[in-house]
Structure formats: structure tokens, C-alpha cells
Image (cartoon, rainbow, N blue to C red):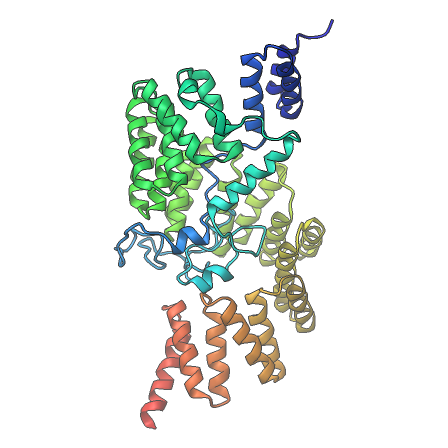
Length: 503
């Protein structure tokens, strides 16, 4: 005997076979009269097919950055802002030791939305900067990303949309709590119609006499997506008073981070830990904020606390590993990356990091095999470029400058915007005495990555050698602006000033 169709559809849903579940529900709905249970189940299945966790999905597009109207202090106190580089009180790593992003933050050990580049200061930089981990194109608008997610889901229904939102009587559905929740999730995630979702949530909250915390959270999510952060903050706070939930704390912290109030977000997380001791997501949230504020030592401590609660947390292991690597402890970093390998993480980035750790820990037998595996596992040209760039560094380390030259050239073949490779090629050209090529390469590097101090400093040295003191002074000033603590730059500026005084 076969299973009862609705029970079978529910079984598919439980086993996360959402396509089969939706198809079976469609067959049930064709029979008169259409069952309410089948309608609700199909709505949930279609939602789950395109569901994106709002807590982690947080990419800020150019429109949100440049056209942001939220009033924020122009000169924030040190250690209270994520938007001003170098406002760390924790003595973050210098750019000489650890590469930094465009906003002045050190590169993290784990790619997350918003850690790729931080906030650019001009529209030109915003357009030039890659916004996501997998593409060099800037994300035009965060809402644009959500729209693409929603429109992809329309392909699941060849006959058109499952629910015609323009014909729905939202007030009627708001009076049926179970149906209303399923419908809200469908409208918000599947159709990406924030206005209708907000209307439904407001009606349902009113019907629940403002006592249902879940609806308040949903209204807060709608306000957040619409950029109304203060209204979202009120809704999340109200929901927390009614029901203490970890998710609500995370949503509220997202609001504070978007308003550039990291200290408030930290206090919120710490209060949450008092009520939910040992909650991994809260501890990880604190660590991320400290890392973005350049307070690497505090971030490492909290990542270690994460591992005490969950010793398979990939982000914490990767971040601690990268911290040890840049602290000149490649042997310890190697342990953490090997741990990731044991856990089943098997990708290009991991083998790339293993190759670097082996090289700097002087385990040369494993270095090249790790890089070979990384090249084999590279999924796109950006990843291949990273591996060739690191192979170039290995070649420089063993003194084979011809191999290094070839590796950096291959880096640029795969990724033509790789500023570090242009800089290193320029240094190799300088050693060969090719002054004009070196100058052109350095100018390209400094225009691609104005936040890096190395191309500016190298250009200043090169110009000073050929007697172009004015250009040398201008480039040295840019280098000092990018890295104020660089001693060689300061000495060069001092020499140039003395020379100009003699003139």
C-alpha cells in the first residue's frame, strides 16, 4: 500500500526533498477542494528552496555605502568606529606584517560578507573594489543581490507564480497565525516583496495584540532590509523584552554594526552571554567585531573560547591559524590548518595556506605538493592567481628570481588587477635595471590599491634614485598616509626635506 499523499509530501519536506514535496502538493491542490494543509506545506517547501539566513547574509552594496544618510560622527573616538582605519586601541598588526584591506583592517582568516574590503572612501574606489569573494565586480546594491535570489526561484513554477500577491486579502490571512507565518516567509524569502511582507506582519502583530515576539522580529527584518535601522532597532528591542532569543540578539547587533556602533554591539553580545552562557554564535560575534576593530589579541582570545564550546568551528580555527601565521609562528598555524584538513575541509585556500606554512616552517618537502594540490582544486582564476603569487614568494625565498618572475607573470595572466604582483614584478625589474618598466608597474599597482604602502614607497625610492625628487616626495607622502609608522618612509621624507631646504 502507498502512503497517503499529504503524509508522503510531509515526509519529503522532513527529508529536505523540497522539489518533490512541492510537486506532490501541487497535485493535491489540483483536486477539488484544495487542502489548506497542502497549500501551507507547498508554501514552506518553496520558501526553503531559496531560503537565505538573514543573520549571515549581510553584503553592503555601493548604493548603501555612498548614499547612506545615517548621521555618524565624522571624527570618532579611537576604538569606537569600524569605518575609520587605525582607530584601534588594541595595538593591531602593522601593514608591514599583515596585509590590510582598503579600509585599513587586517585581512581575516575567513572570508565573510563585508570583510573583503570594508568601506571605500570615494565612489571611484567603491566601483573599483570587488565586493564579493567570488567576483571582481562590485555589488551595485544589497537589495539587488536579494532580488536575484528571488527571481531565480520563479523558474520553479513554469505556470507562473504560485501565489498572486496582488489578489491576496492580507487582513484575512493575518487572522490565521499558522497560515500567516508560512505566507510571510514565502513573500519575504521567495518573492522578495518587502512591502507586502511588512504589511502582513503589521496586520498579524495587530491581530496578536502586539504580544507575539515572532512578528516583531519579522517587522524588524523588513525595516532592516529597507534601510530603516532605528525602526528595526525598536522592533528587535521590543521582541527581546517579550522573549529572550539568541537570533534576536544577533539581528539587533547587525543593526548596531550597520549604524557603526561596534561598542554597543559588543555590550549587547556580552549581556546576551550572561543569559545564554557558552552560546557559540554570540562569542563568535564578539570575536568578529574585535577583529574588524584591529584588536587582534582580544579576537584571538574569543576565538579560543569558541573552540572550547565547539572544537569543529571552521571560522575560529581558520582565524586563529592565520593570526599565528602573521605572528611569525608558522609551525603552530600549520597545526590549525591540518586540523581543518582532518575535519574534511578540502579546498584551494586551505592547501594554499598549508603550502605557505610549510615553506616558512622550513618543511620544504611538503611545500610544492601543497601548492600543486591548491592549483588543481582552484575553482576560478582569482584563486589560481593567489596560488601563483605565493609560489612567486617561495621562488624569491629560495633565490630563483627567474622562476619568481614567471610566477608573478602567471598571476597577472589569471587576475589582471593583482596589485601585489605588479609591485613585486616592479622590484624584479628594478634589479635588472629596467627603470621605465618598473616605474610603469609601480604606477599600476598604486592606482589599483591606493591603500597599500609598498608601491608608493618603492616608487618614491625609484624616483629618488633617478633624481625626480618632486615625484619621490609625493609618493613618499602617500606611503606615509597609508602606513604612518613606516620608518623607512619617514627617513626618506626627512632626507628629501633636507635636500629641498638646501635648494
